[in-house]
Image (cartoon, rainbow, N blue to C red; front, side):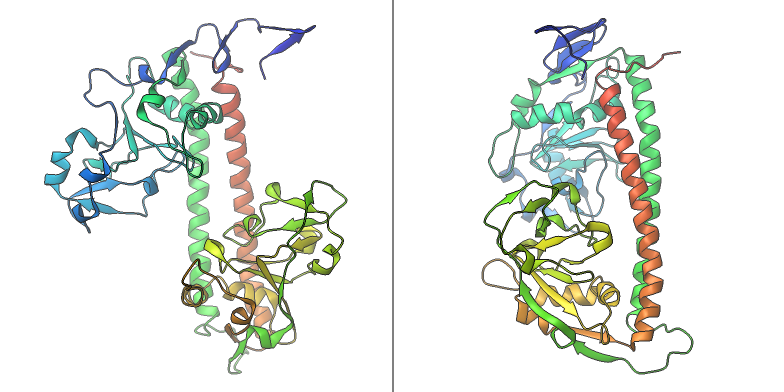
Length: 437
């Protein structure tokens, strides 16, 4: 990054100094996390209560003081969907764990550890749960937005992870957090960096809201089209109900448990449950190639559909797009179906698999004494309401247009997020200096 090499020895870039965080500008102060909180404010850096001090029996439904749980702490944004409350009396008892609008809250636990967001102004005050950490920066030394961005910056996060404990889920103690290295650029420079990054945040937030609105609109359209409540002109035939197994050429194949996987552009990619995201697209950056003499038996053909058969991912699915993803071999925890397209179109089925009706079926069918699961025979009896092929084509076509619009917006969102990540890399390390008027 900023390091340069002359012969066999590293020489410092001009105007920079070496710190525990790497090279930073000479006029930036290197400090510790414990230097950030405002010492004039009581409990400006403190953790949530002990678990025994705030129990589920203290929770209320929709009144009192709202409790901030781990589920509310997003990576840079507050997640508002999960809501629980407690009484005013309980919040008063735990006054040292109260947190207020505009302040920062960090997560003691992954994923990821120390992710941070700003408390919104939905309520006058909140109560942290046990795994939250309140932080009120000293505004004479630190810009709040700069602190937020630096805590969520990959460089700082990797250091926090290295000082965390736990093999399955990481956790960092308040004592260890206070010792972590931090940077303190001149305040005007912090403010300028924060303003630049905020410009990208606004664009990202606006696009995120647009995507959510488009997805909600598509959801309403699907509810009408896939139940026959809304029909296109010229279609009057009654719908019938078919079982997935009865309208499949191949029904319920399990994938390959590869003996070994290796990276190679000459081998087909190995499709695992973890490579399928919640919208049915693939996380190609995490995929590996499979090297097995039997891999040709498990190659997906275009528009083959696979379902996850066990664990938390049960019910997830992917309709293979050969043009986009090329050759894929599917793994053993996936189940393949190849549809008879004279009866059921893959894109129509894909739309049905996004409905609440399907996911309610998954919830009921996957119940087991151990971890949830649905086997090939059970997927085969899934009932799908279908119109004629021509009406399926019309419905799938309309929904496909909506899908493509949403996918293009998501690609643009990903581009903005990558741009911001690149800006954070150069601005938060001082590699690129901003001009202060």
